[in-house]
Length: 397
Image 1: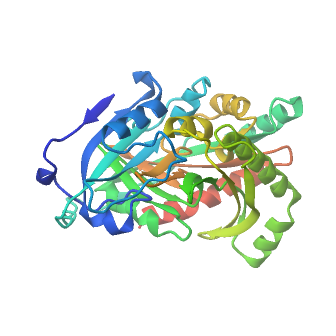
Image 2: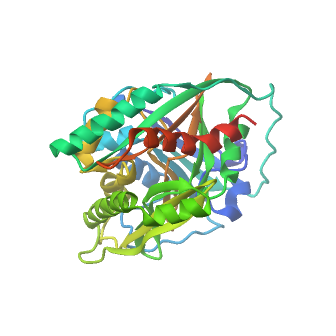
């Protein structure tokens, strides 16, 4: 576990903060003042570590039912928070799966920012031009299809109802990965577009999916399940698909149960069900589930309740994660986790789908989908490729 806490705010270098959810009016006048990195091998509870680290630096989120206030004139603004899917599974006691293909990335990163009156410094020019090599997948289409078939067999046995299966690809690069990954924020529908970086690693996110937020005093999650090409025929097909609707409703029920564990009794409700929205050249079905937080609900308990997100695990969650660990050839790394902002006044974390990560030499990308009894292996392989295609194209530019 590493911690960093500089003493003199005004002496620190300042750049524009690109973390998803950072207040737009503050992004050009923030400076990093403290940082926590944690990996599963460090031991302890990452959710509890995050809450205590934030409180030690002026961001107290031990009662999310109590409204807070963002003061642009105050010292502290808020913090970027990243939690890996592996860390979420670890808190649930699920056996670990394959190791991450990007071990330079921490499983938890918390970066605290303070306001400063100085303008953000321009980013220095890149020392080498950006070049991206060819992608190498961690499994073949045949191996991916076989994993889908294995999930269908598990469903037939009654082990699970649904499992999300994720594949990985990597490509060598030269140049600075940060500007390339920052371009992901411009993809249409990237509600959580932004970047976060540390020593030897960078994350770039174009996620449309809310894992958990606190809005107007309520907990909000927006699970996405169901994908079709963004054509008129694709729109009609998604709305008419009994398979996609059943898969979607199953995850909505899982999210309702997750929120009910930390919500005021009787307050969980589905605000929207199976609303079709667009991400790049895909239609996707989204629902909105909300709840009133229980009195005294802190950040740590909330993270333990919702991480990893149900839409990228399956149902039941524990059983689905056990199958994920057995089937996926490499770890999920930066994908399928949480990335966003925690401030004195709000919480807004996206699910790290449509997310890429760079280490010292490789760019990494993950994509997958939910598998049910009605899933067709070839169609699932094609859907994962369609989700990755816009990101691959933009990063190659």
